[in-house]
Length: 148
Image (cartoon, rainbow, N blue to C red; front, side, top):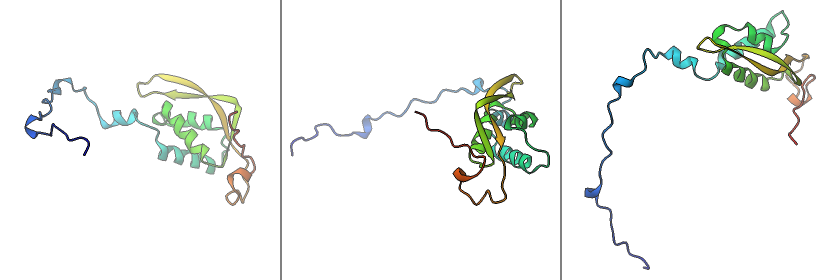
């Protein structure tokens, strides 16, 4: 044996953590579950239902931005844009036009407004057997180019 420890652990030398400070007087006023949810991530289930309803509707969907503008106020938070982009990226029914943008008018939980310029996303042409073909081979699907 090349090295023998000269100091060993002694439980009597251990000190516990310091007591917690009382911060009950610093509690925020009126924080509710609705307030917390308003600050959270996108409402994917509600957004997915809105997109599917718009695609199944008899009235054609002009673009994802127009759909966003028609959503109820709680679904027009800035974070909901990320949810819509996430959902439509995984759906083969949409064409992404990276050259043109449209304005998404959002409504923050504090009632302030913010506009975002997002690439135009429109429903692509639908063929009767579109679900049978791989996503890359479907008509109207624009392949994403890899960064150089």
